Length: 447
Image 1: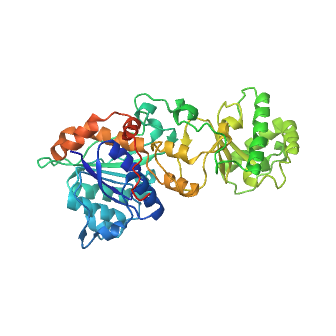
Image 2 (image 1 turned 45 degrees about the vertical axis):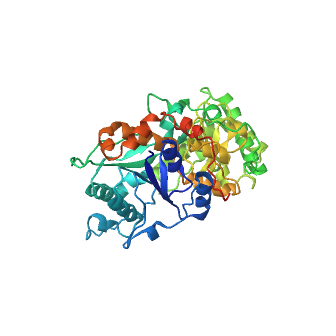
Image 3 (image 1 turned 90 degrees about the vertical axis):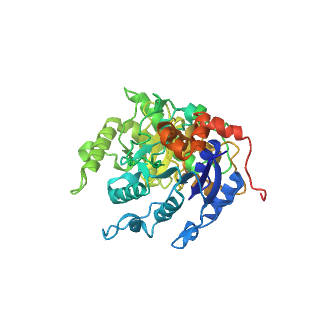
């Protein structure tokens, strides 16, 4: 008999991927975004389109009984008036809807996911309310946030080369006799089993698509110009530097002047003064090479906007710019080693994969989130797919958190849901193996 789960604020189904591969059966899912709900239905065979506030209200809870509740819930502000306590203080927030379900259905395990900032100093009040209200419902939960990123997991445990720090709130239902409310954080923000995140390699571990040309991912002629120019700078400058490594401070082309000509306006922040002095010293030492380079590429013309006359080199001893991962940012072109990537986000700052001379493809972005190869975005624009993936959850991180929870709290969970314990512990530690065994794309019959 399978354990059951519900998937709240479901997106395209990152939680669903992990839980179904763990042997669970989804009995309810809800997602208000129509485009995301369509992709969810295409891949998981059920339509989650709906509004949780319609199914969970003062009039009752229209959500079936279940063993596991998961939610990547939006973090709405909680009242800080101090006039209300407990569940009443969450009223008017989406967390209140989650709490009403927990109060009514008492699932054996609750797993909530949110951005790291939820556990930051600006949200101390909200954090305390969440912990307090879960305990009031009879759950063990940690006071200390469990923060984790998939790049800390080794590849054979579902890790991915992406820095994506998220807070996981894990609540385990007490058995009838226990009144224990506290527990240690399920995971810590540290590498697992001695894995070194610097060993990630996009070519082999993601892996990258072999094609250099992927429709919709190609760079424009202007973008190619910017990269080629700065690549020429990087290669030429590396030959000049004794260490062979570019400086770690941002290079600001508009601030290159001889030290003797440097003038810093009063009121300039200390951090900026430091960068201005370093850029002046750098230019003074290498101005002959730099002047030839700027003239060669017409660097100070309209071909290079102000933000493209800046380079943030974070790629250590990487030989050339084309061998890095790049991001076009308002603060300049940022270059990093081709190991792990920054977090996918729901805005258009898609990583540029230097060795492929293009942006990260949708399929590569899906792999980065741990979704299986058969996961389909057919019929949807790449822009929408990137947005959905940027809003999603890491399948490997979810798998790791759930498995660790069941292993550590087996004695308690067996009393409330033995099916969950048996199913989870029977599965491999690598979610990729379990997802591949599904060997099907659960598209709806309507697709």
